[in-house]
Length: 479
Image 1 (cartoon, rainbow, N blue to C red):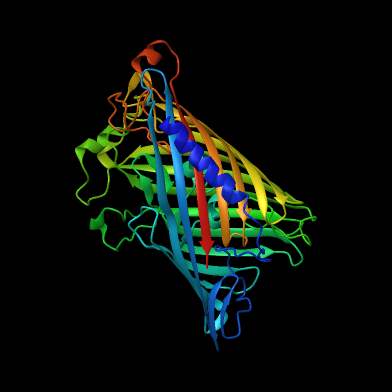
Image 2 (tube, helix red, strand yellow):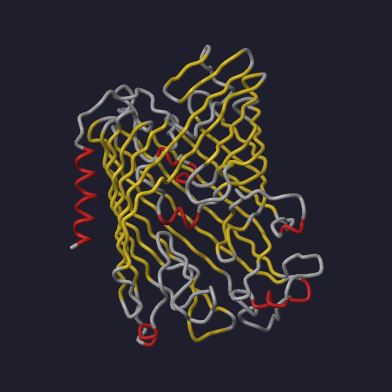
């Protein structure tokens, strides 16, 4: 009964707020993650406007913007099989994000900068972005510092411009997060952007010992002893074409009455490659012999990731689709090189993962009320591990995510209320890499840590599933 009352409370709150009287709409809602090319024109003096507080003097501009997201979440987990987790549920209020951004230009409008500080979300680092940009011309610009890596569309779309309160399951498996390095970018075309490109070199900072993505928001020094600097780098390239006009980085068509009848579409391709030191004795058992005298890990991994995405906008209707593919290979260094006669290379074989995302949204009332649906599918590789040929191991479960969202915009993205409902089904691997013992802990999910398959399902050649229902209501304000 308590579960039903909790769900009813969330639904009533969402319906009540979404049914509130319409208020005046912002004719140009702020895009928190936008970058002005070639400086752009700023306010004359000091202005509290649509996109924050702006200070302008001769040769200098400072724009201060703060974004807050306050969220209510109800989550109910339902497990199938002997290792089910029925009843593991919760209801929780949370300040999901608090971010302040300082941006503008110095000396000349082509010398641009941005600093984003984050004060909520669970991380230890408060500096999320810190970069300097020389906007030379449309064809080429140079940026140095730390920023969101321009790899896949959904991740580089600001969390303030999402259709759901958070990005999807597959994005959380494949995105490349923040990175420190140097980026060259530009566009070809005057009336339309026939080609946009981003290419750069960055630190190759492994997300985790069983998560082969980049994640370089942590502060690191120039010393080898901190265990993070391992002489490894990452290369990244993204290409886009917008043949009918630029598609704003978002997951809906929020254009006004004077624009939304124009058809827009864009296509993007991106590739990412990086090598990093790697230390997980359960995947590569040679790591148990310890590090070398220099402190360098005896094992390494290199990962090649690819994504292709398409985006369509017309009359308040938007459709976004993306495909992801990632291949990881493991290597031993020095005297720990594997025996070429071993079919498993004395450890895990290569991993190949892939996924698909599909999002559709429609503005029932232009710039005021929209609804959206989401479909995510993940095929996570299962592999032989530590020479064990009797069972399969997996880093992540295969997963399907289906969602419904409703957004009510009071002043565009600057003041909005979002309600969403998600159903996530995870097909469990037979054992985890965390301790390689077949225990029921250690598999990496997105919304929860699912158990492993039960002994009975393995013996019966059947599957266990972890199903999760999630209801979320979020208020966002940007000022």
